[in-house]
Length: 271
Length: 87
Image (cartoon, rainbow over all chains, first blue to last red; front, side, top):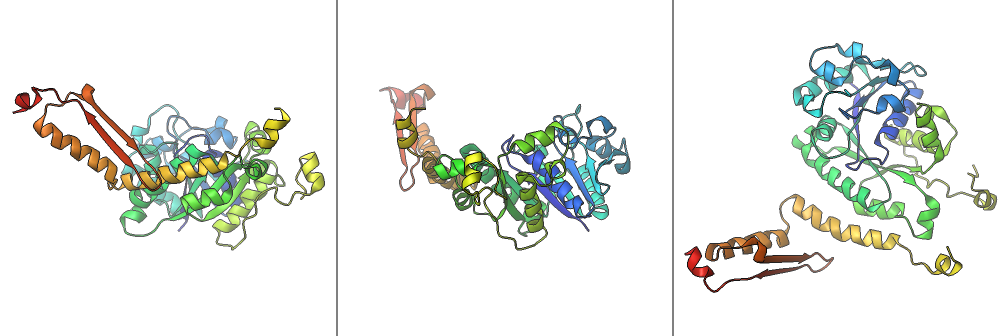
């Protein structure tokens, strides 16, 4: 039985889709069978970020409504043969997602894949609550910025009340993924530090993804950042996050912290 | 940016941290419906409405949520004949 992960945040634009694609690809790069499911019905983007936008035939809503089989809707990644995408519908709205339909799809995916990654839409409505409903693990994507932290707090509340696990009296595993982190600005005191966010949200840290041009470059070419440039700082951070997700006890380092004198001057990573 | 501002500008992250801590302390309480200040506000208005026909334009409620202490101010204009109308 595969593990179901929801990538969520409340706030839009913090990096849910980027992170879903990057984590999904990183897991598949290790040989695991992974499917990334786009729950953003009406505003799908995961297909674009993963470079599969021209190959979408059927989508999640088609499968739920019985208009297509799950196997017809799944798109296999061209670069990684164990990575699949289940796109959202672009034309229908989120009312087409039914609780029973989603349960069936997730149930079927769990038996075929090692990891089912649900890319949640922003907000706290139907799409977001259905994306988190069947999750075993939640990854809360947060930017070191007040509105993002506030929305993450709200989402953590929903994870603890609206998920199946919570309703059955179990605890849902929650992890914080801090994205777009700029160590220099945090050091200057103009950005919330890692410890500030951790203290406020009090969930364990899965990883810190540095603010980086590489993320935009990867989405420009339609490739998860872990595939586009495996040695880039954000890719390395996602690979580490995946190792922690697998249960490895790997200390979290703040990206750019080990910058040497020359690194500082030239603004490049020392390692 | 001039040099003075560059060197003497105060840090903004501590303010962000403090504002979030106060806000979230209150929001977490109101999420499970146990925010006392909100409860008081609603109950006070309900009690007054039992006796006086409230004109929403004439009711002014202010709340200030602090880290240690919150304040609630309910300011209502009660016309001389209001009691008769409600009765």
